[in-house]
Image (cartoon, rainbow, N blue to C red; front, side):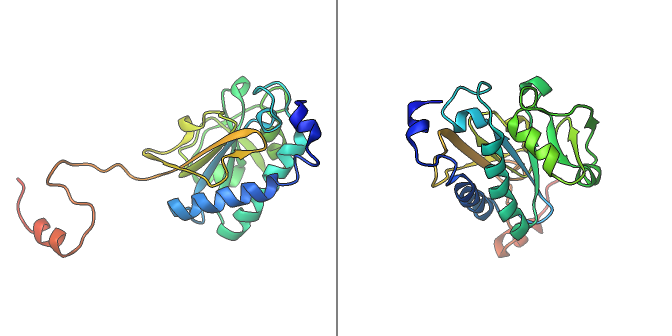
Length: 203
């Protein structure tokens, strides 16, 4: 452990509440709602101030999970926990949710040394947990620079959290929006002007 970690009175104490805060900020910024997917990538090693993949801890994973669950119960989104690269960044999700979204299941049991502590804890805690190969999530939070972009819908819109780190782990997060298609004549909201323009011809 780092000296800073050892000297902290309780380095895990604020994790759950800080995770609650940043998820609420993301939900507010991106309109995260019931039934949508939130992908969560976590390096618990980085939370403790260590290099990713070297010092994972289920204690930190438990605190992060608790923070996610508090907000999930309020909003109703579906959390999806990303595994580490040893499981090709597969994801832990509840099987009924995976089936609802038509996701492809893969076979493995994440453990701290192959999957990561966060995914291992989630797999053992989420009811009916399974692994899927990939998702296209509506929003995501990355704690420790684990690279969750491959599992976000297009187009990602970064959100700057008020809390920049969980423990010692850098935090990034984003929501997604539909692609804006078309050129200079395209409009994106149906107001009075847009309705008048829509009545014109194009072909």
